[in-house]
Amino acid sequence: MKKAFSLVELSVVVAIIAVIIAAVSLGSKVVESSKRQRFIAEITGDKANLSSFITTYNAYPGDIDNASSYWSGATNGNGDSIINGSTTEEQHYWNHLSLADIIILNDLQTANSGTTASVLTDAHAQQNIRKRAYNSSNYSNFFYSYKHVIFYGKAVDADDKAFIPTDAYLIDNKMDDGMPKTGDVTYKPAGSTTNASCVNNGETYYLTATTEGCNIVYYNRL
Image (cartoon, rainbow, N blue to C red; front, side):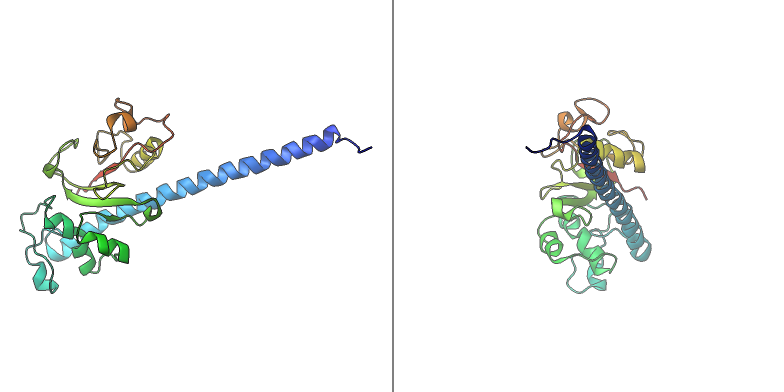
């Protein structure tokens, strides 16, 4: 007859299982935290890259009206200090930064940046999160107008929901005021992102949601 496990042996097994579960849970939290930190670093870098371009060329990437004098074959903007959306200015924002050796676009980013306005983010490329840069006056539903913004989300237009509201809140709270409709970090109802999915039709992030519900809009304040 086989001997049954003793209570001590069973308690040891249960303790080991509990330790394994705790380690897996902690590891998952560490991974998610790392992703958020990488994304925050990317937003900060995007702002610094724009500042560097303006300092060097006294113009906005995409909008610079003498780009072709610096880089053969580059497309000129109209030089009105506004990155116009739905025009070649928005489409060539990232290209001008790349031509100026301020950023490096990988092959996939380069392939998409010439025909659409968005490129893949560095921090979340595997999740197909993209980013666009333009002036908010060109589109509706922003919480401020006539501001240069960078838009982070899924799909070619970078407006589909890409972040669980809790993650959006943690990013916002780290960089800004933690509120989805005020400050430099907000969201925009567009694409698959809705007021219901991101803020539960309220004024704060939908923190009990467990699925992606928000895009992120960053006011590039310079």
